Amino acid sequence: MIVELRNCSLSIGEIGTPTGGEYKYSNHLERAMPPKGYEDRSLTLYFPTTEEVKEIHQAAEKAKVPYATFYREMIRQGMRQSLKPDTDDNVMQLREDLAKAKRDLAKQEQRNAQLEAELFAARHSGYMTYSEDEGAGGSDTSNALVDLLKSGGAWRPDAIMKSLEIDPKNIDAIRALAGQLRALQDLKLVVEANNGWRWVDEGSSG
Image (cartoon, rainbow, N blue to C red; front, top):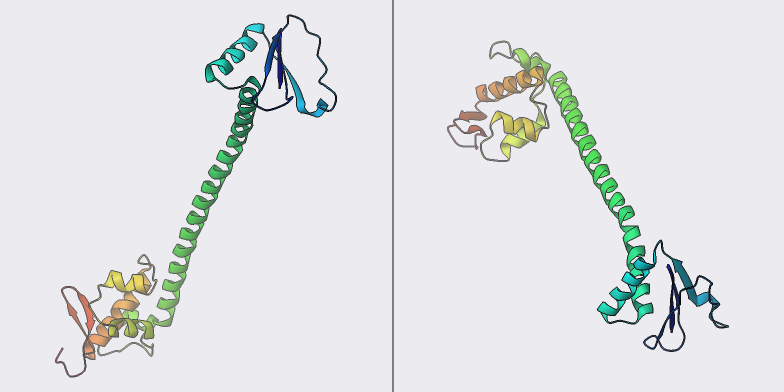
């Protein structure tokens, strides 16, 4: 290996083993041609000042590694570092895309809840004005509501709406739900307790 340090420049090339080497210093600017067969393995770098070149040379000596090994590693580190901003940008873009996807999903889920509430209110509109005497005006009771209550446990109204994916801001849907619960209560199929509504098991007194 031959490493030639010129005024404001470094010339790096390999000859022989990677650990062997020779250091030459000359105060001229002409470029030394690499030996035949090594033309594509030589690199000449020019720096703004001689002092900068000497500092690089001193750093190589301080690291106690062959000059060419030091210079090559510094170049490789620079190449790896140059790729880092692209990687960081890609990660940042992926995070932004993920955040946007989550926002879009939340909006879609909110919209779905609104549509479910509108559909629930429309299907069971007769229960909005339910009374034991007048009934539900021909509307059917929600099968999903019955199945939920039959599944066991006590269900608070907010938990029922969440399970049925009903938007709690839809007043008509809330009225339709409340009417159905009262109708089921009048039929002694459900009871309202402090912890919510629950289905009455067969054979119980409620």
